[in-house]
Length: 208
Image (cartoon, rainbow, N blue to C red; front, side):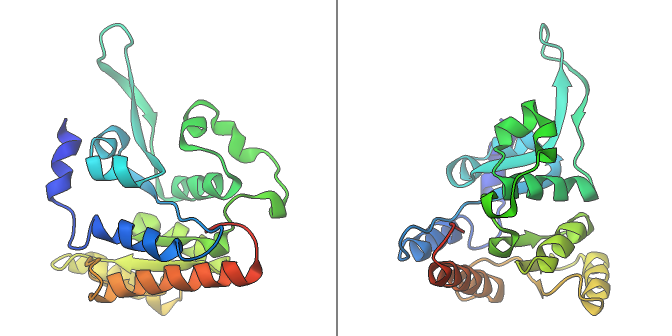
């Protein structure tokens, strides 16, 4: 499966950071951490990665519709765009699983009292590497969550675009994609998770 080839291409610090963050959160009573991918890429390719299968609780991506008798691709079943990404954050927020999202996409419109929503936005930490992530940055920032903008060296156009959003406070930070403990992004993510877990513990309610 093509998705399995992704495992040799991840940035430094992946997948170690997932175990590190779980270890950090495990020091707090009754608090857990979950990982999700919200992507404009093909969901089936992403799911082919063993790292994703091992560490992520849900994947939201583009899907093709297939002919059941031949397995051939017939149409685009789901396309994840700028604003569509925010929809999946609302599903996570309300406690709608990735599987239910596929079969019952209308569930996101169901009314759920704020205090009953499973993952408060203020407990979300969002990492994005493209302009399609800007609406999610805005949503999470507005609701007191934490966001990290990431850009690859050599992708100067993306970096310059992110810098424009930094000036308007839509993007809070900008880092190179290095998730190791001694790298800027890796250290800040670990600190953000520890800070969020401490805040939740002090408040004495729902998990990260």
